[in-house]
Image 1: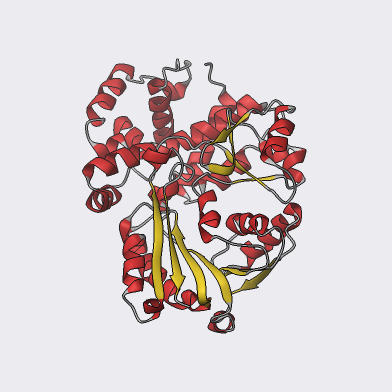
Image 2: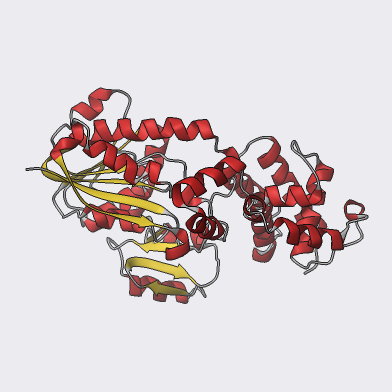
Length: 404
């Protein structure tokens, strides 16, 4: 592979914004990809993947390059040189790469790969909490899996098409996909492609949604004609899945504390032809109280550490703080206590997170079931999805039923 100056400069500019200005990697990369209309798909892939790679391995590369934050541009070029050397890419004779100690880089890499927090490039506190909650063996396998690049998984919108028809339509565009056993609505891309530019996407035939995330709506066991509340709907990936399972019949109330996310959900619902979704911003407790004992199904896709989705959000591990984790556990329990009251007798509740930590997952459910609000609920089943076993995002989901 030959390195091109303008592409490398874009990567360095992106890393400056992500590491030094705290911007989100996905937003920065979106901006970078609009820089030069002449870039082909390979150029764009190089910028996106290289930036994500260096973000993912920041701690390891910084340690090998012997640089510390905040990184100046020279530091970032040194980290870039480490990335290229470890990828086996020949460094051009640019001034940024003068005196790059190639052999030393490989030696340092071998040495640091014996220590998990460097090998997997994670902060000490995340490494400690992962080991404490999952055990050293499981945590080592899980964090290794969470450092792999995520596959692109589509969820077919069954309101508009079938999996077979969608597969054929994408095949005509040279986008090859495969079915996944045990994931009835999923198509996995064999190679990465910009699916958002396709007519199939613009016409609402599919959404991009990880396979693990697709299990949540299924667990909720919705039926056409029900009243369903999605309490932390966000931009509505799971809401839209629920709408397709309900065949547009019945009512879905999608709620969130962020009104701007619900605007995005409305836009997506229109594209998906999902007509049974009503959005409600949670601007006071009144909004919740109005629905006490009224819902057949309630989904709580709770805010969490996001440790299960590090493959697609590698910068999250550098932004997360231990104090946030303590606060979010309290929030999760508060939400469970309040929002569970919307379930009517005989109805069902699903509590889900995209975390792999038991303290955010089964321990929250256990705590809820022994509380005053939880005494009316029966635990039905749960699913602890670990990335190193499934090959997809780390997730947790529990199904509870309210006594009739």
